[in-house]
Image (tube, rainbow, N blue to C red):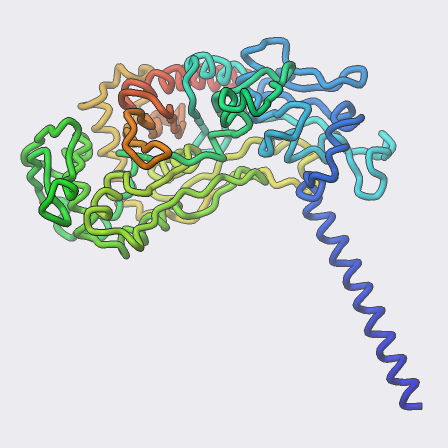
Length: 478
């Protein structure tokens, strides 16, 4: 009798484990189905009749970006639109892993884990998707890049809607490149969406973070002044310990605001070493440099601030945005949204939240607010400094009239593969618009160029912001 009971008990436990396992598997398939669909062994969903059945993708104005006609996936008639939207929309392949057609193939195709692609049309949810991006804006910005490599993102820091998201280099989805060992260098990085999947040396835009740390921890920061002689040895007595301003320019006596406007390396190097590794790391973490963001289900590559093994000189350069510092364009735009919103960021989103498919298929659209990055008092002071930069250093004329732009430029020095210094830079401009009718946060980076953020990134942003203004004005009239 006891043996029978033991066997019955064991059978009962095994049955429970099987039921539990099946339940867990069903749960994972249902709530992680987009990830599962993207596995290599499920490539048939995007080929061989997959995307040929997919729904239509449109921009914020209803402009068709991709649709299925007679068993073939078709893209917008305008080549500039196709290429400017490539990294967002994707093509017939899944090589661009963060694109809509890669991340949300199941939703677009009406794929069912139970029925595959054979689910009757009458039972399929609406598989069309409307994006927040304006194709006309993207096209204009893409042309502004010319043959330069980089990224430009602009989103509404009140709502989170992404209006502009351009990554270069690109290609025409109607004619995907055939990449071989012989020509792969010509297509380096072409499948990567630089807006979300690349990180760059920030240079002076990182001084936003160092400024936030100074405002938080240095008690006399409002009355403190520094002396800049153009070059200063920090962490040693030899030439290798030198920290220098651009071309060794001596800025003289400076307040924090003046140093921010002059982008004085000496002052921010001294601030970083005064604060030390722990406080600098803490503030960088609070501002999301080492944190994870996402646009709905699309991951944004983490930045990096790691001074755990840094010497005093290296710590100094980290406060300037050099050493091993890395940031992502979308990440920097999010930080600027926090400055615009008294310290609390608004998270960007790409998929229109009014689409019924999103709810029915449990798709995360993104948006909403993130964790506070800084006290409101600190955000307001940084905002004043960034606005002062445009008014008294870059010039309001560098941007469209009336936007009241607050910005910071940066020039991130790069190194060659052998570790030696390169003569090419990452040219940055990040910021936001204080005009309440156009609440736009932005970031633009042009990589591997000669010159500075002011000469490379600002002209692209000028085009982007002008186009976004037109787009928002048009939407208001509808």
